[in-house]
Image 1 (cartoon, rainbow, N blue to C red):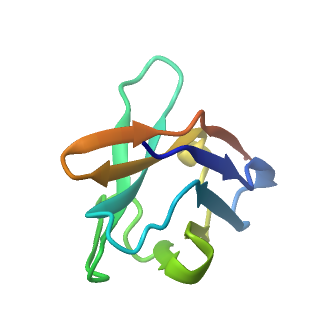
Image 2: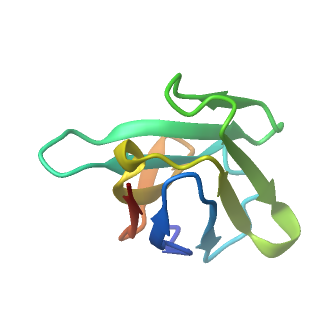
Length: 115
């Protein structure tokens, strides 16, 4: 099993930046993929960004060019750098680990972007 703990959320003005962190309870070196998802009020959870064990990344069209996902295997941590935040980025952001076909989720961290 993998426990995931997100941090770094908060209130920010439009155009601002935040960096989210996801700390894993075990080595992420061999975890197939780590990702960030978000869920806005009244909406379904959606993929924001994902990074494979080999470092390949994929982003939702809505965040391309603004968000960057990265992983630090030495610290068992995945990051999401969010720049140019917009009010529509307001959501609870969840970390996900895809480990040998099993999915694990953190409890989420709230990001609120004011206009």
